[in-house]
Image 1: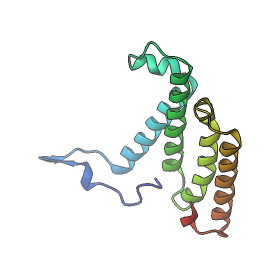
Image 2: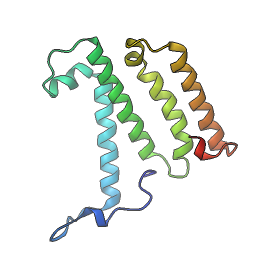
Image 3: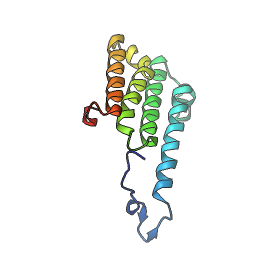
Length: 139
């Protein structure tokens, strides 16, 4: 995964011996679980909140759960990306996340043009980073 180029095998040791868990497997399973959790939070925010015991939710709560789902999906997408391209792809992922979470940001009065303006900037930086025209440090 992009975020874990050094395999944390030592971190998976427990006092008294090995857990018997391969680092690559742990990273892969964790990435998939994060992605699935994000999909559920985004697609079914009320059902997701109900599972946490939050049964009285208004539109603001639903929008914020969608925002949380978009963030989880973004993290999972970056973790699942090819490590060589993860930084450049994160520009596109950030743009999609800004757009996907716009109901929550619009609900608090955030200007629409800012959301789409920043999404455009992120997408351009992602494209320029992947093509080698811009340093990955820009993202």
